[in-house]
Length: 226
Image (cartoon, rainbow, N blue to C red; front, side, top):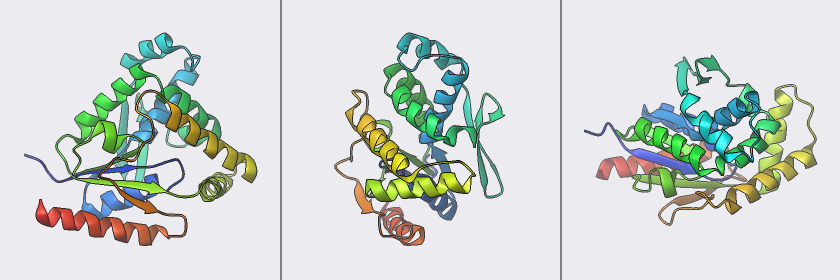
């Protein structure tokens, strides 16, 4: 018996998916599954192992060695890679760009998609990524597709990295966001696409609370008719 709805949140980098999936899951009492963090963790693992992102066979050999889990301490969510906390390590610009290259390989995607499906199949979950509503859970009861201009998404990323004490350049950060968009949209395996039945929300000029309010309204309508 399902414990609740499956809520899919897709969209490009910097549209607000991670923050909103956490807030939405908390308000609904659901489990938040950050699929983007899973790909970032795999990218970090491949870097530590010295595997070239173009080496598909090498990456495939890593798949059985990777265990990715999520833990919560109060309001703090942590990403664990083989038991180690990598929450901060996976959020650097280098790992962001590496992730797009790693995520393009079928062996990596199959491994992580299978794990995501096992985590979310019983419902009561919010999953965010780039192909949740199209590939991972095409039958999800609620699907959102968050968008924002590349300039705004780059600005958000720039402010986030500056707040962490990293030396970053605004225009370079915007350019990296645009490159990530191009990589994610052009890949042959599960490209970034909006599902036909997804509700699109442009977050460019909206606050997090405004977007969250709209998402909660939609989900509660679906809960009432489920």
